Image 1 (tube, rainbow, N blue to C red):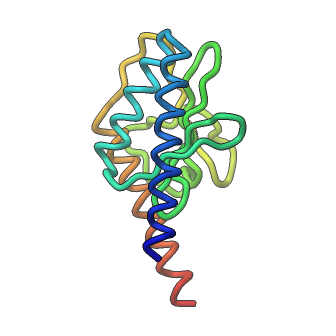
Image 2 (cartoon, rainbow, N blue to C red):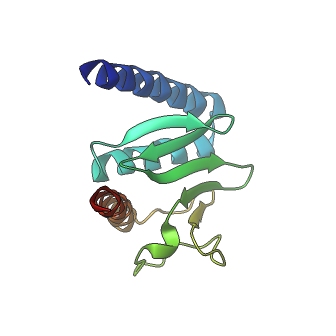
Length: 139
């Protein structure tokens, strides 16, 4: 078990470094925005695991995927894996609204991020993952 934890920590460390590199390589508003949302995600869920998947897309997980951070020319997109199951009283979700599972937040250049609302959403996603895991262990 300790060996698995050590391997996971090493992978997380290298993924975190790769995310650092990606932010640096972007070198514009998208990198700054990705760095900001990354910091907010870590504040909201200190035990979050960082990974890179699907050709370099940052992924934040806690007992399952919380969200991904994709960068495009005109937006930084945070896609919440189970966003359709989350309460969104602040109406942060503004993209991928028609699906049954995912929801996304498109952040454009110079757009202000509602930091507290984002952290609340991250915490809710992590709690949903934890509750789903507990249910599957009981079954």
